Every structure is written in C-alpha cells, then in structure tokens.
Image 1 (cartoon, rainbow, N blue to C red):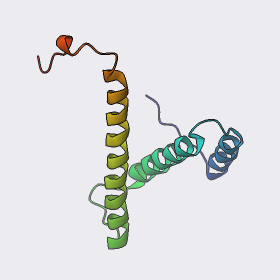
Image 2 (cartoon, rainbow, N blue to C red):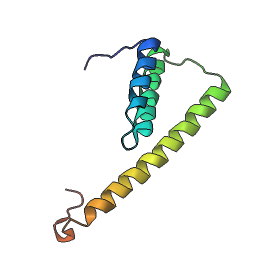
Image 3 (cartoon, helix red, strand yellow):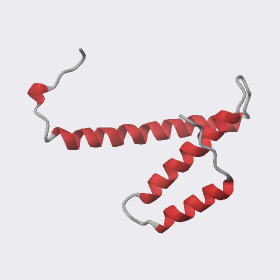
Image 4 (cartoon, rainbow, N blue to C red):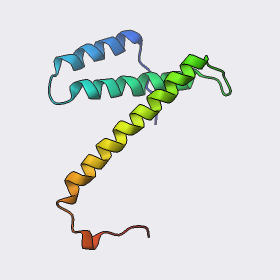
Length: 95
C-alpha cells in the first residue's frame, strides 16, 4: 500500500467539502479521518526513541483511551444489532 501524503491546504479543502455533506454522522467521520491522517503523519515524522514533551504524551494517552472506548461501544452496539438475526446455536467460539 502506497503512502498517501496530503498538504495542509488539501486537508482544509477536504474538511470544507465534508462539511457541505450533512448526512448522518458526517462530523464524526470527518473527525475520525482527520485524527487518522494527522496521527499517521506524526507517526511517520517521529524518529524511533524520540522523546515528546510530557503534556504531548499525556494527550496522546488520553486520546487513545477515548478512541478505544468509543470503538468498543460502537462495535458492541453493532454486534447487538446483528444478534437479533443470528442463530446462536450456530455460533462457534474459537477453532
């Protein structure tokens, strides 16, 4: 998979275009895209063993916990929605 690189102006234009589409949770999708994009860019820029300021590490740790909580809740809700249509007698756990 090739690395995707975008400029700040391209990111701003993308944000503007996404704001014009008001269907569903467009803000959440836009924000998740922005988080993923800028996080990946920072990850690429960081050297192995590079030290960040304490406040930066704290914000990253808090954000990770927050994102994981949201993803777990989202996945749980999706699973529960699909369980209504699932025959639990056919459920296999493990191998």
